[in-house]
Image (cartoon, rainbow, N blue to C red; front, side, top):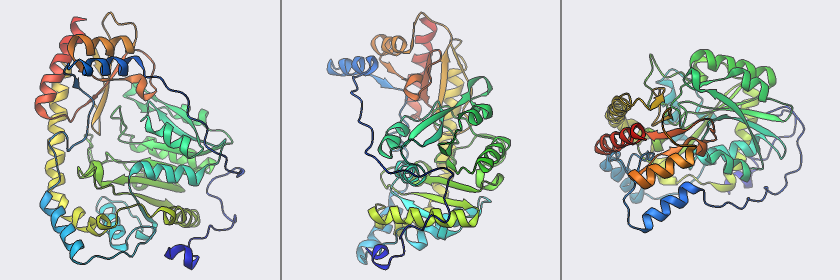
Length: 417
């Protein structure tokens, strides 16, 4: 591979570390625990085997919910590639693709150098690269709770421990800054911010982002900002982006076209690196070394990305409007339900509602009853490491008829319990 042969991507000497703390030898990942099916999954599978129809209330794949990027744009891009096939990979991704991403941020008031952008085949891969880059065994990375469950598996594969910090349900799931400070110890290597947050719909405000940046800078920690739902922001003003409103000394901003442009099958995401120039330079070099090992991002999609981002603007406008309308419909229905308490999501495709009335003892009891008696399947809060009370995780971007029918039935079910 070009990068290896030229020596361009040799890891720099330890003249400058990305985080503070000793570096230790990598050991194999911890063994996977024996996992039995939880009661909810057992009940769901048993119902499916009998032919029972079950209405899932958590899916958020735009393609499955009737939203797709214009096929003619993709067809044209790929036709152009097949007419002039080539393969000249760059570990960071093709320069025109990175320039198009930089333009995307510039148009939103954030400056990112194309040389400080690295393409990946998905945000999960981005997290794996960053966890592997920043931490060694016995090191930890702070992640919010509730949180997306995939983090646990990525951390296991990257030999990293996760330490939770709390989102405060009483304050619309706002980040508890005291919890962030208390979670940091001598083996902490980064702070993850997910905003808009999955599954609560929380969006970190400007003040919170600045305070987290101050905490991170004081401790010499990078910030990893997952912004995959950033185009679906329902609050006042423009979306608060850390690299635009705060000044982290080292920040990794993650996004991609899966959620942004309803293109989950195209597998194209990126890491944008900003901050103190020397630390960023080391991060770019080391991530390019990792990426050069895999060269995983599909070459034709890299070629197509500038056209997709440009031609996708009008689609994105209508897509956002449709998702906002679906959210409004979902909230209108849920507001009529006295047995549910929730904060309206400020961004993304999900919300988390607390069941405040009913005979259920816990979330397993609740979900299994909804499955058996009503054919309804929301996710429980404990799937996302939230184990206080009884919570339901719901998608707000289901196809309109499914929103209307599914959430109306859910409200009736929890009210009558």
